[in-house]
Image (cartoon, rainbow, N blue to C red; front, side, top):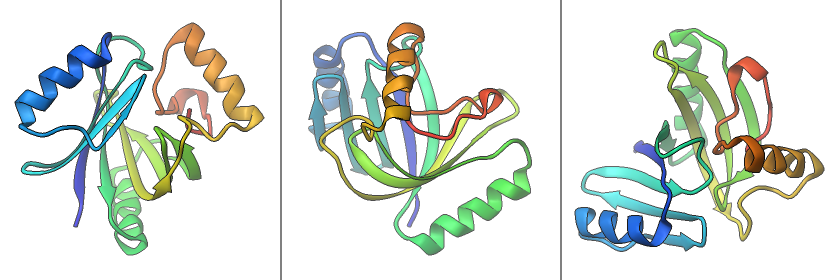
Length: 156
């Protein structure tokens, strides 16, 4: 079963956790100093917030799947939708290990399609490529979404 993913950039994690916990009547499943995530069943959504976004507001949307078959089904939909698909593959991002791809919709909103395969204690995978990108994010702001125009291939 698929789950909608919404990632919102915020300025204040504790204040935002308080707001969204009240709104959803649920505590987050994951809390870090720069990130929090709710895995809700009503509505069925993976709702995440972080201070790593470009600026406060909607950072990206996505479709989270539960297995590889569903992931291939959604990947086929990406190809049918057209556009520049970033096939990221296996990665570590947002304190999780996953397999993912990205596409921008006609309005320019980044859509992530992914299957989470495990947890991580770090935001990114710590590789040299990701370390450079993390330094770039700190300077320019960004979330896990690679920018299709730049044709990046890694997460954070």
